[in-house]
Length: 197
Image (tube, rainbow, N blue to C red):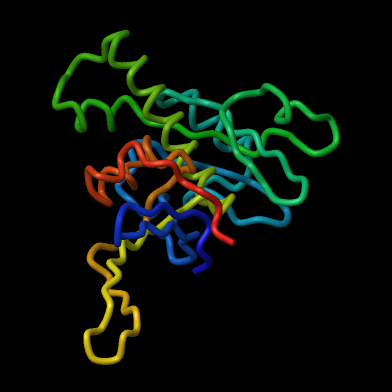
């Protein structure tokens, strides 16, 4: 892991690293099923649909909340449910699939027999968040931290470092929003981060 940012308070230092060991969020317990077709990449979840037409036919018989998935492929990939630039670029982007949650799944998840408009809106937001988290994964926007404490050895005079807190698996590059700074400790919440040299 390479350190990308740091901050110092007294004899303590917060070090933020790119986390190379983050799990795919598609292995988590997700509300949506992400189905994708691409010639060069294996993306999303395993599914039973051979092609997009199979999914469209299945959708005629099954009620679901469905959002399109677009990919931008240029020096790395990005995935979104939004068709705004760069996801509407005529050369480097296009629709690669959908993310969906069936009404049957929603009834089980929310322990209800009735699907309301308010629930459908909340489900759409959840599906969009799942895609944002997956996008962070495919782009490598996963982070870890270590808080070290420095002390000077009385015998030899050397500065020693001791790790007093560490954790990884924070998705997204806004460290206040993704919980990294909060997890590091309250003293780091409003600290000025600087780039690591």
